[in-house]
Image (tube, rainbow, N blue to C red; front, top):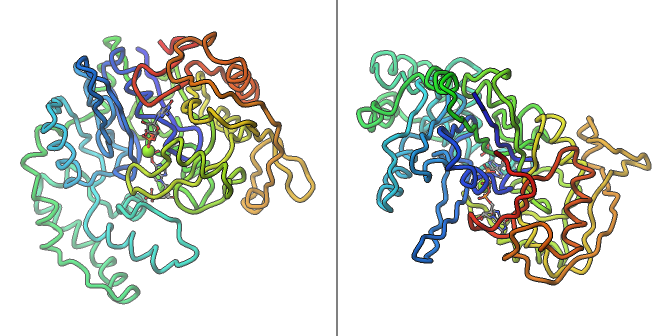
Length: 432
Ligand code: GDP
Ligand code: IMO
Ligand code: MG
């Protein structure tokens, strides 16, 4: 009955897509459990011909690329139906079979007014903005909690859908017109937009909680894949500079209907340095040549919005925190190859907050904003490591870097990424 969860340990874009793909052939189901098309997961596959195929997935679980694997969008996800079909059509056009996809009847749907509200709210906030992806994610989750959300199942009952849209728009149109001076969509417009693909959607929709429970009973392997990451989690992240869903391992339970007692492995993906997109505190952020080096060498530009990612040194206070709140059993340390060529590699081991040492994440937001990293400096290496396939092949300094991070992160580093391709990994302990 193995249920596995994959989460991001930092602020996202750690390489979760690659890690899911790495496990792909050993997994029967891959379930996306939170977020929506704010996520951008890159999977790079080298074909037998030698050609490299690159896929950027937003709404579909990364398992969609593995033949034989059933991709599932769980109830915890917010779905933009137009984007879903754009993505399905894009993959089908490249010869990927998407017919096995399953979508939870209880997943919430992103309505047009919520995309608008996301964008205008950010503009209204000015310097206090979150830096969202503008996809309507936050307002849609707010509606869910406010009990005025639209769910996938509502698309199959036009009367109920119309009533729900009417109810939501009663409030939203006031907000859009009176506060933001924007035109609100009419009920008919919104309903028409939501129903545009309903017929095409129907065959994918089912009770995914039941489907997954039965799969686990049969002994199938179910992998639950997080969007975003620990520090973007709405409860455990750097609130308010977070996304609006549960991105930690516990979110896999609420977002799929699989109970905690069935989960036996939690894999956290951590980059060998740190990046962040959008606003919010980031203690090890670099504004110098080293930051520029990481951005260039790691190609740190958002998969979803194309924004340059903010870059900084490795922070083990964060990875230790991620190990604690997620119950991490294994870390995958990605992009070690990006560090090649840097003479010295500072690793943050604690923070100084107004003269007081913090070994753990400060609970107080202001303290985290004031946190000054306490670094230990490790030597770098110059050898190209992208061809290494065993730990012993890595230069001594690279091995020591991995061991140093592992010793401070609170769980074993089972896999080390040395390049974007599926095979570019050093397996220290097989994940399965
Ligand atoms: P995700 O959102 O966590 O799935 O990560 P993204 O796909 O947004 O960003 C990770 C980027 O790093 C992608 O471009 C991956 O192809 C790439 N990547 C993943 N692992 C490695 C690695 O070990 N080395 C290098 N150089 N690139 C990697
Ligand atoms: P993956 O799954 C990195 C960030 C946004 C913004 C904040 C809130 O690829 O790791 P939202 O649109 O979710 O309301 O924006 O969260 N953010 C991400 N940053 N990777 C992601 O996903 C992200 N999804 C959201 O930049 O700061
Ligand atoms: Mg990403």
